[in-house]
Amino acid sequence: MDKPRSTDRLPDLRAAAADATFRLFRLQTDLYNRFSLPVISTARPFSFYRKAFFDNRSERAVLDELQGKVILDIGCGFTPYMPDSMFQACRRAGIDFYGVDPKLGQKPRFNLIDTVARWSTNLRAPMDPNAPGDAWRIGAMADNLPFADGAVDLILSSWLLEVWLSDPDILASIYREFARVLKPGGQARLMPQPKLTPGTRGRAFDDALQAFDVHQKPLPVGSPNLFPPAYLTILTRRS
Ligand SMILES: C[S@@+](CC[C@H](N)C(=O)[O-])C[C@H]1O[C@@H](n2cnc3c(N)ncnc32)[C@H](O)[C@@H]1O
Image 1 (tube, rainbow, N blue to C red):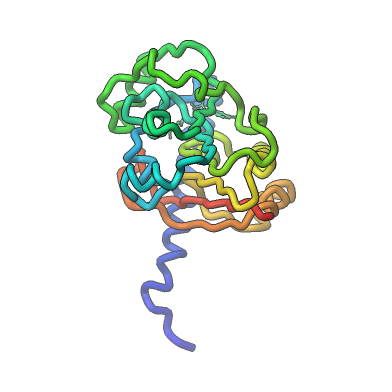
Image 2 (tube, rainbow, N blue to C red):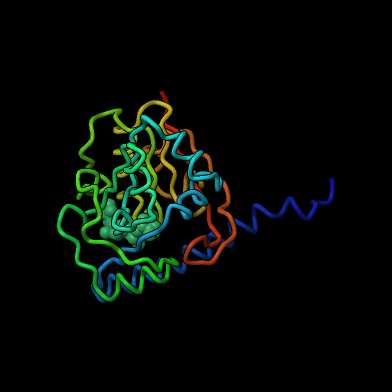
């Protein structure tokens, strides 16, 4: 048998590193739950979204690609209040880009934790509580989206699924909801994610993913609070 080349082992190493990343996330969420701390709502600029979800293509290229499409950012936090967010760039370009988060739908109040969280995501510009776009800020949970069947072209979600929400049954109900609102061929792009191995997360989880073609690729290397060792998951809605 051929001796394995060193590059053959890279996917294993990446999966192991991602596994360690998610062990740390679980410790963090356990701590939060134990002390009933509130989920931190961060905010991220368009440059982050381009790198995470669009292969670092230019703003112009991404906006051109999304013209006429309906996009949801699930668990967007306070990103829609950032002047340099993808939310605001799409709004200016006339694209239906909705920010979805249970904390939206009411006048935002940014506390000290939010400010620290914003700094940790490399944002220096202040969040603007009067930022335009109320109609595109939706106060809702990921498993109960106020959108019609097959109405959505693209779902993006960063730092929620598998990080703050990791119960496989809850994730299954969210993926069923994604399958309901996405058009055939539409995609959900999710990060950061662990390696998804069928047969390890229970029947409901595997069944929910049956509605999709599942593809995973390693995230670009970056600082751990932006791009930890983990994967981008792309779920493409089957016809
Ligand atoms: C850590 S923040 C991530 C914010 C942003 N996406 C980012 O990458 O910085 C997690 C967000 O998910 C929201 N969230 C928690 N549970 C949710 C749920 N079931 N459905 C939708 N959003 C949820 C929280 O309110 C919080 O704003």
